Image (tube, rainbow, N blue to C red):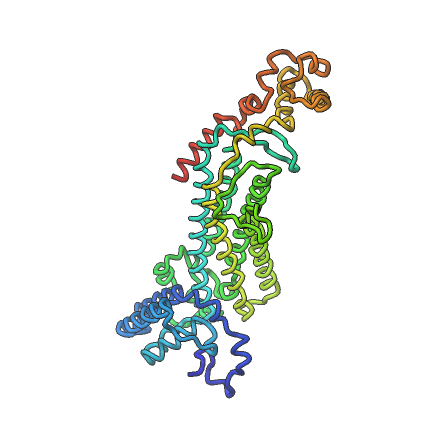
Length: 458
């Protein structure tokens, strides 16, 4: 049978090389469930407006569900000359129920059909990623209470900066992933518009009901302009961007934990089931999952660039170039899903090396800023206090001692306002307890945030 996409105007068969070059069934077959669902909704609408009979609609419905079952079980023939999953399903439908099957494509083009199927698929995929992000947030949140007594150095420029409670780190990632979830929700609103019924480019003269199919497919609304809808892939670009930001967050987290698991840092011990060994060095326990998370983020970001370049010069409306949107789209979702599925147990199962962290936490003068702010409270201008504390730190560095081991007289030589009460803010534990601002690492503030996220996520 000739492909249903070729009309009687053709006098020559398709060149076999073009069939191979143009096929997309090798990657778009994963849209089969969405295609069947969209086709059933379309058939039901055609029946309700009187374009096909109730019996026709039932035959189409039953045959499509049978085809869906056969594809799912792997018992479905693939033919390159049928190009894509949409033509495969329609061709088999026509083989089985004849002219009734030929009625299904009434008032529908592959343009709005493909867009509908893709939107349905992206909507489901976004929901899956959102659910995984929430589980990852819960993994970080689940660490907070148990790690409340651990103080870690926060870094700027990879240099020790100020002391923070370990949950402050975990809450930071919860915030990042929550912004990702907000972007997913916002993106999903634009994904969730029904293109079905715009047909090829200009709409149709037939009395269809686009709102009925939108309702049946759980779309929030219908798209507003048939010309725009035929070419619109903004929803794919936006999804790819959202996934790229998620990839960036996961890559940054992976890099941090790779560093933390080194002998030099020794802050973290990862679950060994997510590590690998060396082919020659028997002592190695390598954080390969995190390294691959960092590396695979490049694929997701590269896919976004591929998609941007794909559409950048396309005129209205549909162009066959758009067939190439699916491999990078599918790959980005697959990659992010795999990254998240591994991140969740790694976060939950890793252990902080408490003794080793505590043994070195006073290194790096993490309490210097707290000392400066103590002086500011005494009425010293910030720049003056900054310079004085720099000199005090310089003295401690010369003696290779922490600030807590300097005498009051040593500090008074640079800041006469210093008295014994300065001891209340020196040392990392005192420094952490001195914080008061909203969103800071103050213990009470951390607990407030933990309670807030517990109510949101649980």
